[in-house]
Length: 340
Image (cartoon, rainbow, N blue to C red; front, side, top):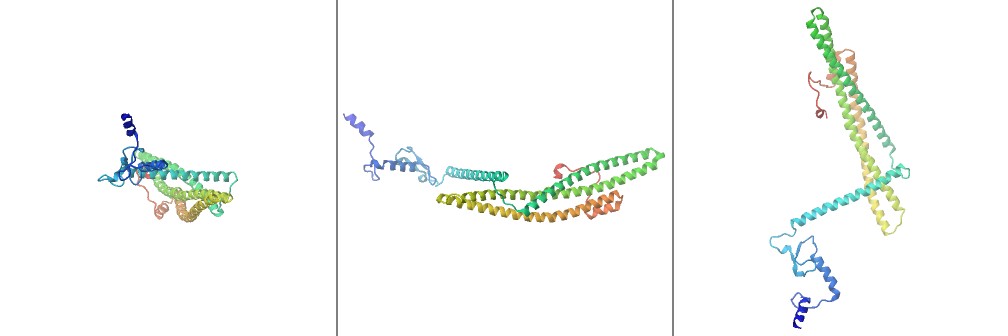
């Protein structure tokens, strides 16, 4: 009997109050006590605790790390976890926003393509953009033809150089035809010299037009691409706001309308800013194009005319006038990296 009583007493829970006296806990408060125990034992962002008895253990088994001598309020591991968690949340939020934006823009794009949606159009600006694209295409054609001319003319100059060397060699080995071979050798060398001067002028022309087409115009077209993307986003959020405005006007609907209005305003400001940037760049591009092409076309005309007229002096003056520097004889063609 005594052993039974002792065994029963050993399995009984005896609550202890803050003064060390025994007390009774109401059964109704057991759930609240369990929740408080979980909150105390659970992870705390402000203070890390070491739990000796798990979530079901007594409160005395919880030892705050702040009470340990030499420890700080934030352990290095806790700080690292907080930073990692913050980065992950930012990435997830960014992916979520990107997904929503992509969905809206794709929906708007298909609506426009199938004639079910409206789009914002600036007729004057669209016409200028179309003219720029056509101009770039034609200038690229000029570039390809000019490069082909350089290749063919370079082959001719090399042939003239080889022919002149052959004439010179034969003039030394054929005394009876020394004068005739000598005249032809001098003529081919003169043609070769003038040909190299013309090649220098055409190379200068190609380099300048290439910069205009593949750098200046390309930069403007990149801004136009950003503008067109902003236009699509603006129309997508505008259509979304119009659809919500036709919906119910309850509390949840008004909240959605207000959020859509904010997004609409953000994308409208972005669209108008990029439209202004495109207008300014198109204006400066036109001025720069006229200035560059006026100089380069004059150079091309004067050099070609002087060469085929056999006017060596005028050809040399043309190179000096446009500050075209020829490479010294025997210099090798620059590598691809140098050309870039």
